[in-house]
Structures are given as C-alpha cells and as structure tokens.
Amino acid sequence: TWTSSNPAIATISNEKGSEGRITGKTVGDVTVTASGGGLNSAPVTFSVQAGTLMSIAITPAAQVPVNVGDTVNFTAQATYSDGSMPDVTKTVVWNSDERGKAVISRTAPDQGKLVAIGSGLATINASKDGVPSPGTSVVVASQVDIKTVLEITNNCCAGQTVTMRGTAITW
Image 1: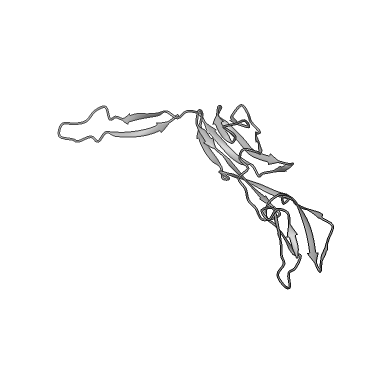
Image 2: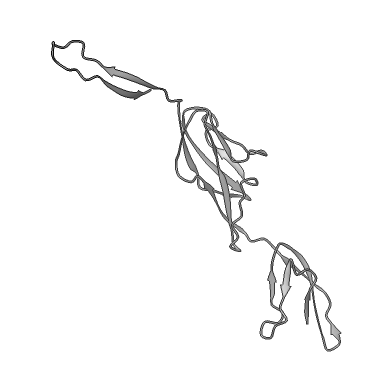
C-alpha cells in the first residue's frame, strides 16, 4: 500500500496497474511510504515543483491609441510547461521604453496601469524570471479639440438659396 503524507499536494495510486503512480496537485513536498506483508519502507520525500515559465502574454496585445491623460489597464498571463496559465499582472515587472510618453505602474495596487503623459509612440512589455512578453505599441495623441468651421458664401442673389455646411476639423 502506497501512502502520501499530504494528498492535497500529491496523491499516489494503489489501483492495480498504476500502483505507485504519483500525481502532483500543487507545489510542495510530501513523504511517500510503502507497506505490505508486514513490512514498511523508509519514507521518501517527493517534491512537486511548479512548471517552467515558457511565455508571458499581455493584454491589450494590439496597438493602443490613447490621448494624453488617458489610462489603460494592462494584464499579464503566464504560460508554464505544466499547462497552467495564471494571471501574473501583479508579479511581473512592467516596462515602457518611452517614459516621457507613457508610464506603467510596477507598484501595488496599480500594477499594469498605464498613464499617457506625452504625445508619441511607446512600447509596453512585461517580464518575469527573465522571460519577456512581446511588446504592445501605445500611440499617444495630444488632447484632441474639435472645432467647427463654417463654409460661408458671402453673397447670393435674391431668390437663391445658399446651403451652409459645417465641417469638423481636428487639430
């Protein structure tokens, strides 16, 4: 009979055909023993380790257009060799390559919060344990003012109709 000291960390099978097969449940250490025929094995420590970090993806992943003063919340998701994909927004190191255009918080409680501070282009990425994410471009525009310009005809003849048009121009 196989026994795990903590089945929440790792279970060990006693079923015919899979006797002794250990399944890791969460990171940690367990002590495994075997017994049978009046004999007990020496305890063996078995470690369940986290998978290896393979990649990090940040969202939004596509180009982000913003205006000066806008904020955008980025998130980061890791992919590990064991197939797990946890949210790592609060544990990655956030970076902006143009801090005069866009800054992104690395500190609690605002990790991943970008603030657009100057017009231009910045690339945002995140890294953890030496694994960087692909970058996301942030295009920061100056605050947009919309003005209406009227197209005016300054004369007409009696009996004619003139149509006034408004055109939105941004600058």
